[in-house]
Length: 325
Ligand code: XMP
Figure 1 (cartoon, rainbow, N blue to C red):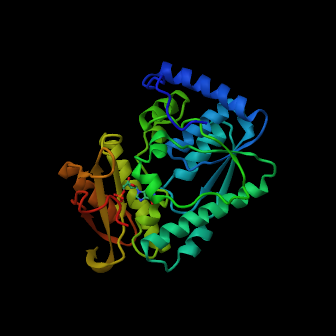
Figure 2 (cartoon, protein in one colour):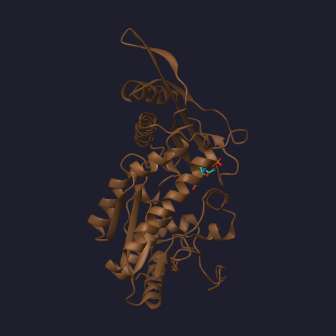
Figure 3 (tube, rainbow, N blue to C red):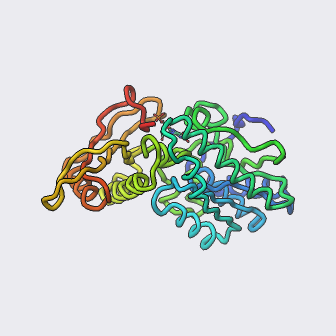
């Protein structure tokens, strides 16, 4: 099949256009796979979620979604995937708790690229193991979108590692491969996915693993996850969700002294990064109200275990990348 978006294809900007796209794709998927079963790695990101919802509409339980929890997801994410896909959409969902497996492999590894490679390889291994358990599946669905094909998406092509082993010889099903991100969101909305999934900020494949700087430890990882949850909650309350392009916390691998209830502490800092960008190639720091910043600092230092200080990263890209690793 051609990898070029047909010139005649209209941009999907309205629920009605999304509706026709969904009808067309449902028919095309049924035509392609018949009564065969289809496998999909469901991360909970926009692209894989919309792909899953389309396939569920087309073939129901003949889609098998595999959600791998590698321990580097944000707070509440695995629960949301299970709630939306298994409970609300009735999906055939295999949930794999691979947390210990990933964290054991990552223990003591400080080099960012080695961390990425381990996470990428382990992910493929876990997924391939699940695929082998499910005998007789010929099709693999993927949430490839048009920028991935054009390779103007520096993100996935540049960062994500590897592919599936060749013995898993699948025929690909890629229903959103000619869509741009904004179109994927319109389709996701029309398919009834929740806003928190459809308008989700970008989240790297290696997840919180690249925000727990250096060798990942479980306690520092928890500090990243908890502080990230507070930041997201406060940005949402302030109406900044969907307005600031990407915002998250980082926990570096050093400590500083502080004071809590009259006692000296020696704990980690949390770094906050909030940026705006068009294409992630360059980025500017988002201007945040000082009162909101102070409130977030207060909450993080009081609520997150092992943290006594908060730093706000005011570095544009360049010179800093968006992520710290
Ligand atoms: P940087 O840090 O290179 O990030 O300025 C640009 C965008 O890419 C995301 N990013 C990743 N995405 N796997 C991904 O899927 C990765 O390894 C990865 N590293 C960075 C980052 O979150 C930002 O949106």
